[in-house]
Amino acid sequence: MSLPEDLLRDRAGLHEPVVTHLQHLLGDWQILADLSFADLLLWVPVPSEGPRPSYLCVGQMRPYTAQTIYVEDLLAQVVDAADRPMVGRAFSEGRIIRDTDPDWSLGVPVREEAIPVRVGDDIVAVVTREANVSTARSPSQLELSYLGAAGDLAHMLAEGTFPYASEGEEEREHSPRVGDGVMRLDATGGVEFASPNAMSAYRRIGSTAQVTGSHIVEFDPHPGALIEGLAAGTPVDDELEHNRTITQRRLMPLLREGSVVGALLLVRDVTELRRQERALRVKDATIREIHHRVKNNLQTVASLLRLQGRRLKAPEARDALAESVRRITSIALVHETLSADSRQRVPFEGITERVLHMLEQGIVDSNAPVAFAVDGDPGELPAEVATPLALVLSELAQNAVEHGFPSGQGGTITVGFERGPATLRVEVRDDGVGIPEGRTLSEIEGLGLQITRTLVESELAGTLDALEVDEGTAIELVLPLP
Image (cartoon, rainbow, N blue to C red):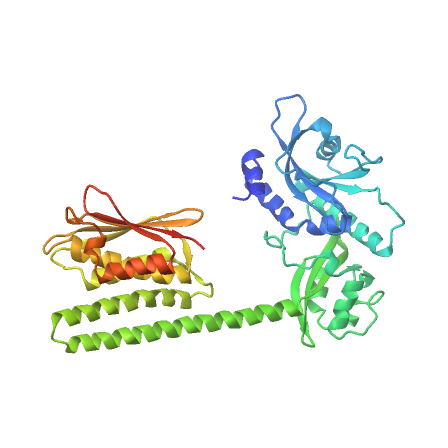
């Protein structure tokens, strides 16, 4: 659970519809901060032991278009109503409260505005807009347009129509920002103002028509969705591909008492970004295909070895080939998992279960059954760790079956995982006969354990040790995580 979500549910004790609305706001209020050239703070009431109410800060947003006032975060701080009188007025009066005189308590003149956040008929929170006015000067047309649009969004927030109910709750990290390019449209789609970046975005898709003062149908190659969204008062978030250029568009209708009074159109040239994403998808598909072919080749080699094993008469030779087949199959399992996912990390618990199932089907005597169990979750491991570790587990589990349980005896083999911040501890334990008394692990080390030790120490840069246990055998691996 994220910190704002924890604050909203646990500290403030808000109901689910209110939490959903405020989470939606927290995911989409960057544009209000940028248009306002101001810091935003989100306040909700919390129980207070004193005579006055207290307010908890559950969200903070700094603008990209101006210097922030607050270097330190105020998130999770509780303040008394006396310290935030405008917040209390916004809660009680249900309207936007504007400060007439700047506040100098922070060392710079700060003009504050408190905007009530409405859900249905209730005021559930208050957003404060706090701007540093020490750099006040004659505003440009761009700044006036930004501030006018910010005022419209503030009224929508107070009326409960912003954020838009029809949009999702996800944070808009990849949506166009104010600095990418913004236009102010009237209620019919005429352009009242266009920032230089917005005009440049349309120039790049081949539009040579005048933008400011024109209607959107005169310069946008595909204005249909924008016109429909403007008429219905619903937001539009799409991409326009024209003349080998891709432009991301976001239409935000501005509403007043349920009627559309205009709109903001944010645009961003994402041609290079989409080209890189497509190139990555091609690379991912290529890598997955390589893993698929490696898996197929390993399975082909394993099949050839099985055929060869059936033709051999010497039991020792057949057993040696069978061990090689199991080792190859363990490696193939990792490549099979990688071929199904574009990431170069695999959920290793599933691979462990498949390796143990393969051993259960291949080497366990049905008259003396040995059960396998997995304890703990190793999580996702990179391919360079998963491949040798799968082979290591196969070798250790096979040794446990062959040497821990003499003919006619069954038991249990458990593979346990304990994942730490920087290491992975693996334990392979059985309840069999154990290591012969007076002997050490190195003294009884055969080919399987030699392969295991080499892989652990050379490929995985880890350690392998035998643990002292009352019953059976326990082998411990400690591996550093990259």
